[in-house]
Length: 508
Image 1 (cartoon, rainbow, N blue to C red):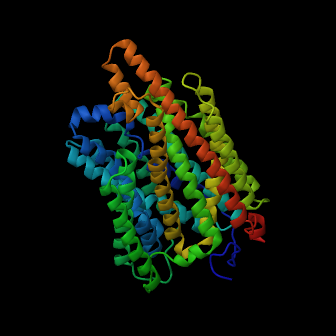
Image 2: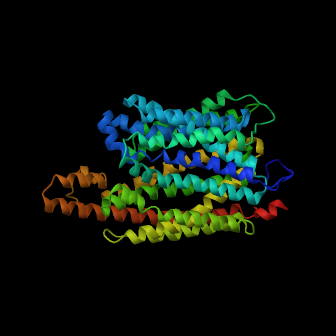
Image 3: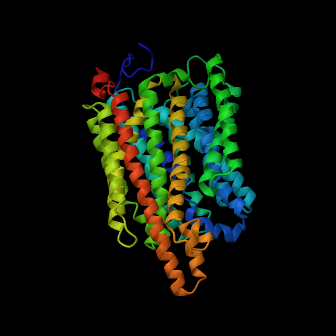
């Protein structure tokens, strides 16, 4: 039997109190890594007034963290396998903490942009290292499933809490305070990590593949950049060219992985249906989630008229759905095949998208909240089970690289979801508007609000009413599309992962 297959051959020991305390320590930085993707949203007005960035610089402040994070995930995951996961995790925590202080007290736009890039490098060490350490700390499949579920909840919770934490801090402090949240957690990790977390490195002591790392960066960064620019500005030859450059380097990267003596990624993992099926399922799930998040944020603020903080607070009920969904999936994983749990979660997600399709221009809050809770209930289990399958399939000495591949695929899924679903909704929005609507107002609902503010009251209100109706129509078409895709992915999962046993059968 190959090392890394779901039925393992090593001697199992159940985790003790030390491992569970270690899990608590590594979940906290995961929370902050995802929070830093969205914590700046409410700080932009104060930040702009203080540092006066150009529109281009403002985009770099927002996006550079995500670019660098996605680009360095595979490099840092592989580096952890080579020199030690705990060592890389603690080094990343130190970088993340220092970069947070620099960002908080930045005196120029250039200084803040550099700090955001450094935060991305630090964050790229935290995600794969923490997930790979779970593979090292929890040998029992049932306990590992619980640990992965807690880890998943940490990342999901950070994405939800980021805007809320930012809004609360900005009520009382300056814009840089949103970064100082990171510092005490990173200090705690640096103090407790050496005491509670085990060290693990690949016993083969293979050399780090610098050429492979360079090719991975040359693949991921242009592709992420191109996809995000398409999401922000629409299709353009320059953006498509950036994606093409990334794909060309990607072909060279795959060739390198096939021929190198010590490749960064064992591409034979993708021939295992457990691994490739889990990665594909999670990626498509993030495609749908990212697009949905974009629409809900705009709907609550620009259609229902909520302020940013109020809109963020209405996302909190979905956190309860996420907790319940992960808990139910984890408990069922001991007895049911992953294919059943994941497929059921995706069908539940399709129901949630159907609920969201019922929203109107004035009375949609109840539908939004209900759909988010049901969606979190289904998707929480899907992501937790898929992530555990990735870890269970990969050999222990390559768990960091496998975790990084999974995280990178999720980042791509999110970027693609915003670009593709956003473009579909924008096309429907423009098609549904009356022909006499001014050109700039045909671009986005936000632009329509800005144009309406400069028009006479009656004309402005008519424009907003038409724009809101068109936006809701576009959103309804997109969520029905998401529902259909979720059902198709559920069928795919049932077919591809059906032979993967439940966790108790794996242990036996």
